[in-house]
Length: 374
Ligand SMILES: NC(=O)C1=CN([C@@H]2O[C@H](COP(=O)(O)OP(=O)(O)OC[C@H]3O[C@@H](n4cnc5c(N)ncnc54)[C@H](OP(=O)(O)O)[C@@H]3O)[C@@H](O)[C@H]2O)C=CC1
Ligand SMILES: N[C@@H](CC(=O)OP(=O)(O)O)C(=O)O
Image (cartoon, rainbow, N blue to C red):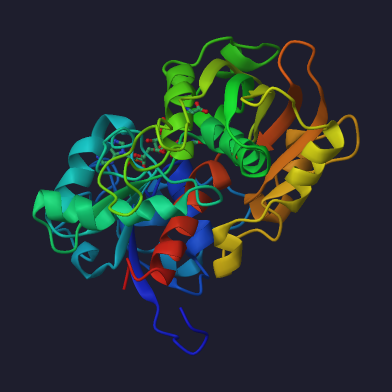
């Protein structure tokens, strides 16, 4: 969007009262491209003022113009949604599938955090610091479904997002990866509000998050993969491309819940496909020098550094590092040789910002720049 083009695009937020929805509101309340126009939530909240029904958990106040806005039902014909150039979804997965489909059918454009369409071969699964090129499947999605304008774009699981940014930097610098092992330490905000009870999480670590390991193992390959035919995007090949001699990365994940409010940590070990692995200095340089399309396009939410490489041996830490670049980057540290695979490191992501709302917004900003949202 050129600096002279001041017309803002009206946006809707589904699941506006939830953990991700509140971040959407905070991040969009003073946005150069977008202006909040419609809010949707469950029938528990619909018909009431946003400020009255929302258990606001952020440390900035609810924007004044949002407080008195009436929450709508999540229906495409509810007031306001039809005028929106894009609708962001922070809906609970139990309802996101049907509601997002109804909005798409009504020719609305959805940028979703929910898991429901991530595996759909027609829907791109986009981490904005990694694979915005996958937006090129959108014309195929619309054509296949007989739609003129409506489409769905998804962003990834929060832990997956924090993992694939450093993995992409490694692939860009050194070629394909063979194996990735990751153990996560995930914040309680990842399970929404009210989430895990205090009696379960205080003084404790819970070594199970339902469905999370499968998501990390599967989504990583769609995000780092490509189209079967790059010249005519029709289907994702999940990192398997005979011509490029790429094959799926073996990913093994263990996920745990820890008593941290925001910020998912990943303990990662990687093996490269090549027989000789790069040195630790070369790997650190690849992280430090990593640049991505969102930065080249200079979209408003792009962080100045997509990866912040920490020198101190005891970083990254969620409490100290999750706010870097407004929660839009991935922190990496403790890069060192792995005696079993090739290299190991620690990564950290703000799960509700880059892990959710910031990614959706940055994906939409990139889509504006590519003419996919007007
Ligand atoms: N939290 C995180 O770190 C991340 C979350 N996600 C995904 O984002 C989505 C939202 O998560 P989160 O914000 O944590 O969840 P919350 O439980 O905090 O919020 C859920 C939202 O969905 C709405 N909702 C629930 N049931 C219905 C219904 N029947 N009809 C319409 N709206 C409904 C709620 O409205 P009401 O208040 O009226 O009940 C609320 O606005 C989920 O799909 C989640 O998996 C993705 C990445 C990270
Ligand atoms: N499951 C993640 C958050 C989440 O909602 O993930 P997903 O969007 O993949 O369902 C967590 O508990 O931290």
